[in-house]
Length: 144
Image 1 (cartoon, rainbow, N blue to C red):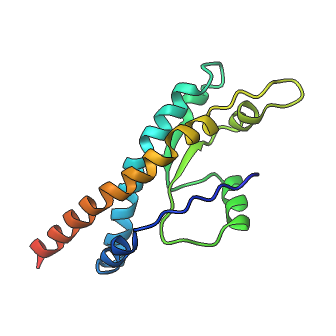
Image 2 (image 1 turned 45 degrees about the vertical axis):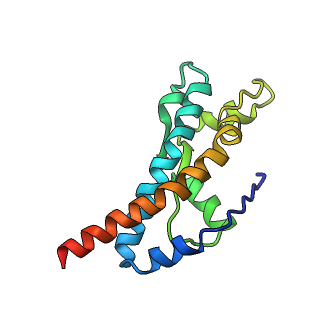
């Protein structure tokens, strides 16, 4: 599986602000931010996915969870991180559609969605993270 690396600069202040929040609140803020930022990519993938008997387009989602096989592969290839969000399908037919096989030509839907949405998604994360951090800090201050 090919690995894509994206470098984002200028998020040091956001990281400091997140570090000032309690860990559970920081995780919640990141989850909310990542889910909101990744949904347009999932929408694009759903539009590009073939509409056939596999109902592939219905299974494309944004989630913190992977199926058992995806988890084992992810664990082997990546170091644990504070918070992760995944965009894709849990339908086994998705791999065959995306990459094809000897009887079925490739019909990619996730890669074109990533190519079209990677920079807008990163921009959405950077722009909306301040909003979610600020909102969480206000809620915490209100509780005290």
